[in-house]
Image (tube, rainbow, N blue to C red):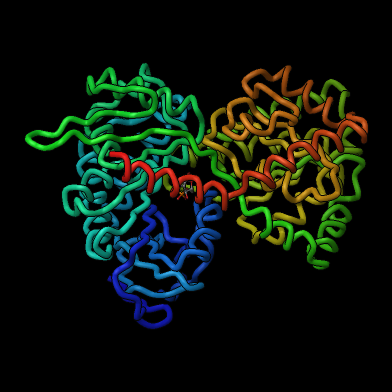
Length: 481
Ligand code: F6P
């Protein structure tokens, strides 16, 4: 077991506000010499929660990203971080297995086939218990606990058993599937019971709430009226659980600050120069995940080049694919498939010093991402299924020049709000091709009008409003039940 202390043991006492997510905002990686380096944890969840945590001196409970790392609680930006230690077996069976090879594909409409293994389920349960035990020990009497995402769906119920005094909220960052899919899960009842341990269960989209409530009715046979579920309790009063949608967002002020930085502006020019100042720069920026639609996008682009609708000397598609879940088979295969497709396109249409696809399998700091957003003419956010997709909202927030065209999948949660984007069905290659061309050829006045209306939406519904709305609803559920 590695034992590392970041900046001294915290002097905070029990906390009245605790956030629990699989990952802490800091991500540890082990260097070859055994030392530990720290970076920002991957994914939209941490990006979304960070501003909230900064404002509300709270405690964040999560995993630091590598196995067997034992950390004393520490402080970062005024937030107490409490790490949950996961063994190598936990990482394999709970994180890579049940979370990312069972729940992730099942909740994303079975784009890849989910694996159902009883041994994975047992470890999912024991790791959820581990998280619940840590939170129970950290929480002050009557504290509010906000549990996040599919990795921790049993925590609300486990916590309620340990600490009935707590107010418990749960928010799911990914889609909640329809009954026909969810009912495949051998542990479907236990998952629903776990979630119903919360006072408030939040989802991204209204359709996720509908799916959840239908499942509660069919699997548990509980009474559901509006968004209220009556949970019968033996010998005690019934409990009431509220289910509602709260579309997550980004920190609008943080992004405005970043894009005004002269270094970011200069970098955006440098990026265009570095790719040969093309007439059109198309951008994609996603975790390398099969839900994101990489192969569909590459197929459409390949066909546009071969049909002669795009001129390979005039266009560059920059494809940022941040490394993700690299030991899970479906992710290993996806990386191979993407790299093969990129190689084919560049081999076919590239020339010395000019390639139509710039593929970057890296994580970049936020400043670099902003510079990329500013440099792009067309942003492709074309997931096959996505809870929300914060990249779409970040792109919009970054374009204070009112320019740039967002092509957005109908299957991303963000689509409910960003109606002025160019809508696309990414499963339909012809539609993808058509919408890419439409975005490329859009007149400046229309680009501006669409961007301004999307910017207004994101400005007025940013992450600060999201967390405020959720916590207000949580406090309210507790009062009325
Ligand atoms: O919401 C999607 C999510 O799984 C988050 O929970 C997580 O922060 C992000 O994607 C990145 O995934 P991972 O933690 O597996 O690297």
